[in-house]
Image (cartoon, rainbow, N blue to C red; front, side, top):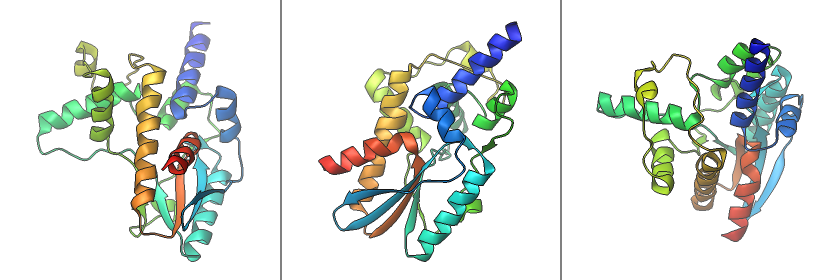
Length: 228
């Protein structure tokens, strides 16, 4: 009974961490076999977007790869999602940055690692690398780095306080935390990144853009561009 409850709890963590939407909608997205393509109207730009999710069926990601190739052949440039680390010169500051990012994220490792532990999503795979889906150096990283995300969070809610568990749990070890509320996470990991992506699009000289981003971001990005 204990292990069943534990697996269900982990299942909920994975789903809520994947994107800012309901559990039912998240599961629906994961089961998709074909990638949809949406349109955003903004000035003289032709903007298409493919809503993504972190775990899904291989056939879905194969379809994303085909669509990326199709649009790139038609002259579109890919603007892709990826919150990443920009290494700091100081090793201590770099370590603290990673620990703060882990606390903000709420768990260590990847979504697939969590899925494997729960045993619930064995038939799904982690989103493949962008390179394997046809994204290359001519395309645009249109996301924030972890230092910027943390800076936004701390500006809104105050410093991320690291406790003894945060400091003494190795970065590659199993870790879970619920110290950051879902509302706070959405304000930063969704809201701030929506603003960032909309800003990149607004100031871009590219006329044909294909956005590869989580579905939970698209409604907000369209709203921001409409307001601007």
